[in-house]
Length: 339
Image (cartoon, rainbow, N blue to C red; front, side):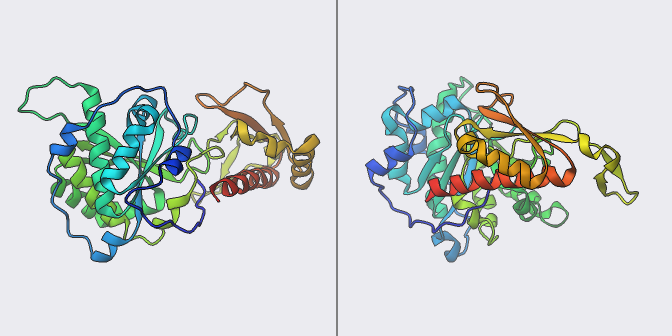
């Protein structure tokens, strides 16, 4: 996910309904229900973050299934509008085809002050919990999972030296917290999943601790306006040949240099940028880089996505340059949309 620096907008307690409808993707879901559990539940005690962090706008991203996303949006956007009004936070969802790599899940981003984010998270998670219709006995509150998206560079602050920080978060919240290893199957993916397991109160306490810690990282807030799309991050290596230099580092085996190829995914809506008018862009990229570039036919997508296959073949240097030029074209288009 590209980190694009845009001017953050100030939080508004009640956003314009017209603006919200433009940003929200409508859904066929006709689920309309007031989250009684969320309204009646007492919020967890604050962990006393600094006053600077309380007021400073921040964000949190997490995964939901497509069905759950529909419940959060509500009929005609009614539920998400209600949640934004009650919490004061801004709630955004990725489009139905913008999925986190390696999953079939969409992304929700909640932004605003920490207290507002926690209130919105309480409303959303209580709503999803209610959707599960879990019929356990009243004495045992169900323990569920929520998967947060955190950049690889920020995960270190959550783990802490020797795992001390994450252990203190587990002890303080009584929730299970697990950080996934970085997924090397998706080239350029710099985000990891932090799974928080527990009751709703335990999850909210853990999210409070995690978010307060992330706010201390100056680089974390810079990604607030990055696009949801991972279109150029879903690259899979087909026939890369590497040889070790004996020091643990890996370099391309130049004996097979010209047979190397990678296939990356580019969203169908952006494939025209790669091709260019009359094929000019793809010819330019090929000539400048020296790589051969092939784009899959319409309807031939990367598995589990709506991304077209772009296969780049040539030397390692040519592949890198061609891929960089393709990524830049898509990133520039995404930045224009964000503006």
